[in-house]
Amino acid sequence: MEYPERLAGLLDQIEGELKRLDLWEGRPPPAEAFRSPNPFCFDTMSIPQWLQWVFVPRMRETLAMSVPLAAPSRITPAVELYFADISGDEGNLVVLLQEFDALMPDPDNC
Image (cartoon, rainbow, N blue to C red; front, side):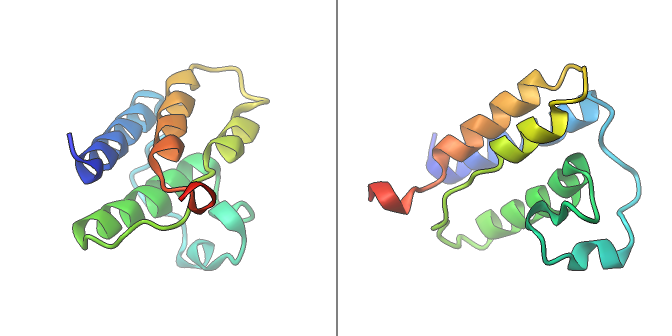
């Protein structure tokens, strides 16, 4: 399987896992929530909201436009931190995001 297809498949799995965990929402946050200058919009959205409304759509758009992905991904630590105080079944979501992070290019290793 080619790199873009692997990333697209992981995005589908991440979406599916958010839905399975009942973290997928029917309505987006208010428009101002998207204007946060902070990483992961941590001051205006929860991590599941950010994954649903920012990360997954932007990554799908980037893949559809065949834009090279140049930045490393370090999403997993933020997700692990978010779920640290929540007792639940989010383990597979973390694993999927670890796989995504591992697939992203690392300019330090080029």
